[in-house]
Amino acid sequence: MKTTNHKHPIVMAGIAALCLATAAMAAQADAPAPQARTVRYADLNLNTPAGAAVLYKRIKNAAEQVCGDGNARQLAEAMAAKACLARAVQAGVHAVNNVQLTRVYDAHRDAAPETINVAMLH
Image 1 (spheres, one colour):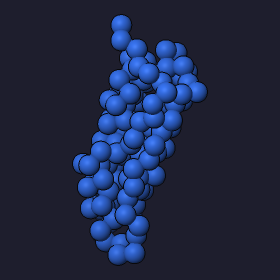
Image 2 (image 1 turned 60 degrees about the vertical axis):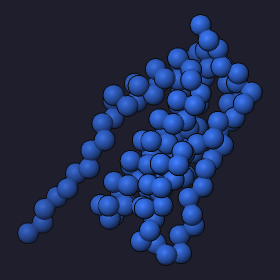
Image 3 (image 1 turned 135 degrees about the vertical axis):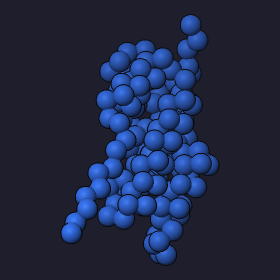
Image 4 (image 1 turned 45 degrees about the vertical axis):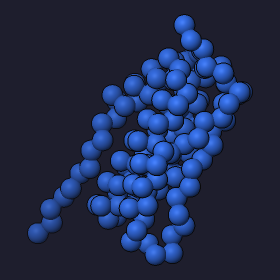
């Protein structure tokens, strides 16, 4: 079984995620450009479910910082932010390449399908 060197940080949000975040924020002229975040995990034991769960939370938090608000009032902004978030988390999990982290990611992905509710008002 291949083990991952835990001393190297991973960088969140690939080019596609940054492009999506930029599109989501295009309506805000004075909004700062999205940035990548570094997630460190040398302090975690990724061979345990608990350590992998903590890293997953760190990755998700970093992705939320990069991608913006998935609950924005504007539907286009919310959809772009949610798509960015999904891609950034996936990229972060993939970069670590750890079985336990992938299990945590899969459990969260299967438990929380991406949906947006739209209400029609008359």
